[in-house]
Amino acid sequence: MVFRPREIYAHFQSENCDQGKMKPKRVLPIILTLTIMTCHIDHGIAPLPGKIAVTIYFRGTPPANTQGIYLIVAPKFPPHAINELYHSPNSLPIDRDTVYTEMELPFGHYDAVSLWWYSTETESNLADVLALPLDPNNSLQPLGFDITDENPVFYIELYANWSRVDRDAAIEGTIYFNGPFPANTHITAIAAYQYPPEQNIHYLLWLKSIDYSIDSNPYHYRLPVRHGNVNYLAVFWLPEHADLTDFRTIGIYQDPNKPGQPGKLSIPGNSTVSGIDIYVDWSLIHP
Image 1 (cartoon, rainbow, N blue to C red):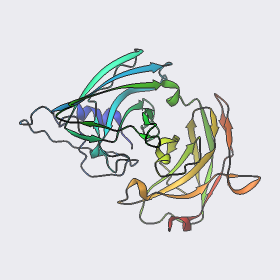
Image 2: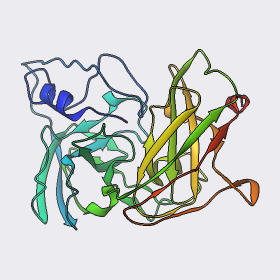
Image 3: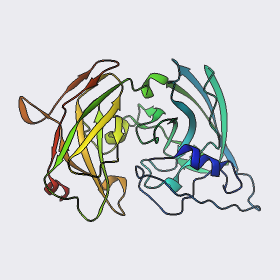
Image 4: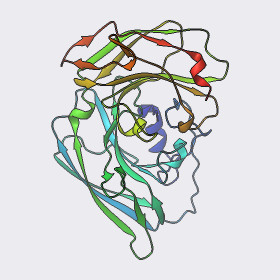
């Protein structure tokens, strides 16, 4: 998911918005750049019948490049498109230890609730989740909830650690492709994980950082990350008109001493680890 916060929320705070639900001009996969958004307004729409009430407890200090944070609710997780999401119309306060907020929602089931962080320097993206509660009784899937006529208000507490989005280090290197980009390429990205993903949902939950702007061969990248361990660094490809589940892994950073195995990196704080090159094989896009 990618937002341009200054552009998008200018629309959300105007009369071009309908109940805070995102309605883009075209349906895009979750990690695609959203550059054009139009909303419509129906002046006859009645207030939504239910709501989510959230108390947020913050730990740490917001990064200096914090633009704002927004409450996001997903009826389906992972969502396939931006228009499936509900969001708070304005940034929540970032100068308090505790924040209470509410959002009106229609009756129904919701798969996930989260806080999304936005930077003043770069486009925000899928890695910028500040809080996403998981369900210990459901294999650590995102915590879902229901809003019904009998229970019209769902209350939850969120715990947000600012260090999650304080990327004080970086990985850089060069990505080499063994041929031209396919004609149906929509997104090519490099992403870092603390743990190697084992299921599709892990590609979202365990994501530390992602750069989806790869568009040349070779491509020199510099990926901001939080200091610590990166045990999986991979290049992904997404075709046009695809859902999130259609991504392909087309290359990984390999252990220099164990070719074919993911390389592991230990990233010191306030530093850049260089020379982390990745070789991509386009034949891997075919199942």
